[in-house]
Length: 420
Image 1 (cartoon, rainbow, N blue to C red):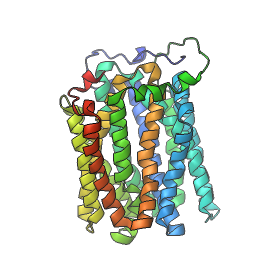
Image 2: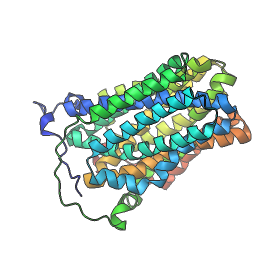
Image 3: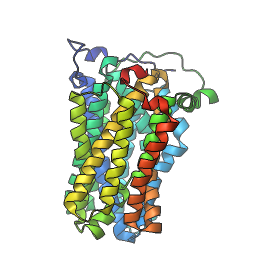
């Protein structure tokens, strides 16, 4: 493979390598800010698209199609995206992906300017956007460990997750406020942020040791799937996230809650979408200062159970305050799951395999998020909005009980460092 790398850049070696903060490393800082800009733009764009589509059709199922259009590329391109992340400069892959996303935002702007009312054009652009995201995820996840020494993986994972949560707090809130001035403003800002992310990624530095690029074989292409299938800890952690969030994801239905149940409008939608990230960011800050050092497996399972319970609470709530509290709780529980899962996968996977394993992981995560939105849209169309959310939360708790017995190795994980 040509992307064999040293764990950290020579430029980034700090005076005291025992420092617990990965953020002191310049290239990790640039990477973190670039990711922050890109995720904020994605979240802002999600608010605008969700509100526009629901206003056009008034059909919950169309909100599900928004998620499906973004998930299908990750599913269809899994084997390709992971191989690209392992064979080429991950930094360049990320820069190109965010540039394509910037072009998508500007095309959304153009559709709005033209007065488009055909959702098929929106779904077509979402497919293109989903293709860029499909290549972005494995490159981003597999690049991060190359920017920090191994003893800072947990700290870097917490910082990385905090970027996601800061963005998912700020992005929807900013998107909801800017939407008051029209979707054109939202899409223009998204395009600018994606471009900033693309430029910053080009300034990330790390040492690449280029070796002979071997011809791709079927065995090398599917190596990520084979690796996960033979690693019970990795398979259990990733699949738990897949099925739990697939069943318990209520975010696709937030436009309906904002408009028809809680009656809070676009600004309220941004607030609702930000609430899980408030809880998650608070938990990420806590975990950065108080890392999980024992009983990691049981904490993971417990956090997912809390996620399911909070989903049920949100589903039945008709109070804005209670709904926000349940979403905050849901986000905090999800952050525990994210950090434990990400560290388990990173420490258990060789660097030369990280792109392909991350590509498979992206399908699991995409299935739990975007496909989960599609599932929520279908169940809401079949059973109604509130029953769909409650059933999903109950299903999440059921998955935790089942996984406790299917993956005893996961339940028994104590220290995350020992997972390697």
